[in-house]
Image (cartoon, rainbow, N blue to C red; front, side):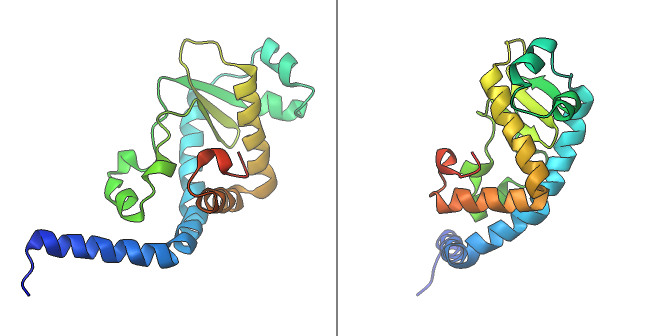
Amino acid sequence: RTRSPRQYAAGVRASIRRAFRHVGGTLVIAAAGVFGPLWIAWRRRRYRRMGRGLSSSEVEALQGWFEPALLARVRIAEVLCISPPLSSLGAGWLLRVLQLRGMLDVRSASGMAFGDAIVIAAAGEPVSASLLFHELVHTVQYRQLGLSRFCRAYVRGWLEAGRSYFDIPLE
């Protein structure tokens, strides 16, 4: 039976999806351990340069929970929107093939930690202590686990939670 190019392409996509579901989780977790730290380090450099230190009132609100050295080292960058990973590299096709768009779409995120650089998507708005606390927890997790192990654990948790952000153990 002859298939049209469109039918053939749909069949190839379906085969890739089936293969991904079979071995993809392990592959994605391994890839996260390699590419995640590279992306985090790249974003950390950018956001540290444009960031500010914690204000005295922010330090006061958080000092009972975090080491003074961490509070002195962390930088806060305030932006309008957090840019998704791989977007600037034109790799949207990869996200579609791997069916990872839900995980890597951070445009609606309020904040994100990149090591000791925290980016807050609220330019011009006051930064809440609860959001800073949440992102500082991730900063501590990065430090305790290392970037590669953190990325693998985060993605594994996301996959095991049925791709639900709110059910990721590291959240």
